[in-house]
Image (cartoon, rainbow, N blue to C red; front, side, top):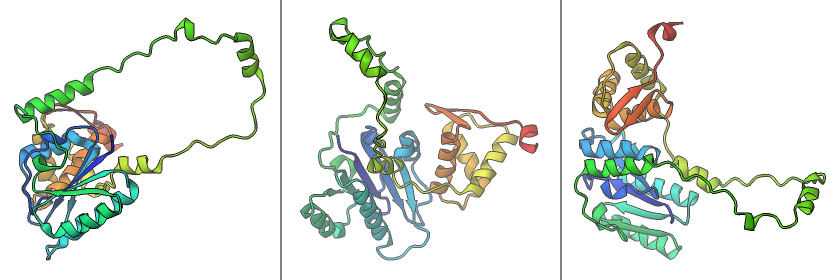
Length: 268
């Protein structure tokens, strides 16, 4: 299945739920204007749940069509990385339509929808509630991988002596270098911006010294308070994601646990 990239114009469409985008083939970018500093809790939790498959792009200065140009820029970068992907712009702005028409003539699959539910090919099966969708996702991820079956005797090598001689023969000096799928590795990173290391250090040191919050929401609030309430939510999300990806925070549902050094270790 091709990767589906969903670019959300949050200034234009205030998306609250990403419950329909939990599949592993979805990648999500939420584009925020300077005034979008308060996001729905459900959206923040959903972005956390998607991990490195989702991120925010924040505009620092507001101007006419600035967010549209940012979406166009990142769309172009993604198309260059993964031209066989499927691209969705979530916006009510019809100004994207001429660009989309041009992309379609170049055999690039791209559409615009006024909501996630109206995306082309989207199956809008009813979801009981967001908590249920999160629980289902965790349950699916928690299933252990099936153990590989032992090879059948009927499929064993009918010429064991020849196979042994083949293994014993000297290896050829010509080695074929392993192929690296640049598209896959680039798409996996999803063009993610890096965390502000100054903010990360502030939050990290604070967590070492303080009583640590026990839930994802409380942790986000703690990080926001330490880094500064004027900081956009997207920057706080990057700090949170870095704590998780670097192994200092372990997430289980809405609960968090910590693997942090002691104050003495930090001081030494």
